[in-house]
Image (cartoon, rainbow, N blue to C red; front, top):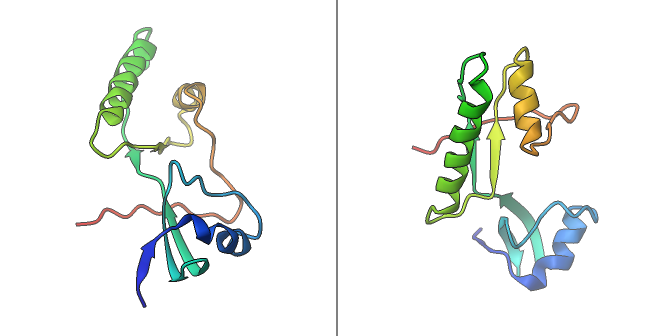
Length: 124
């Protein structure tokens, strides 16, 4: 079985697979399907993104400016990359309330749907 890139004629088939939930954005996501054009039988969707697993800025009056500087620099770097990053995943320790507020202040949305598990794959 061969996978192929999404084609606009696959839209109705994806609607059926996703049961009408609009969970993809063809302008931002990379979508791959299996099946005939117009009749996909399976789909994999990913959004090029970054996994932010460390942002350490201390806990003093200059913490916020340090976090802003580092985050703004990383965002500018990501926007100028050959493959445009569309999302960032932040891993924040459960007891780090200042970092939670900072990340939420950036506009990040908490992803804690009951039963979901986040995995990280780093291709070698």
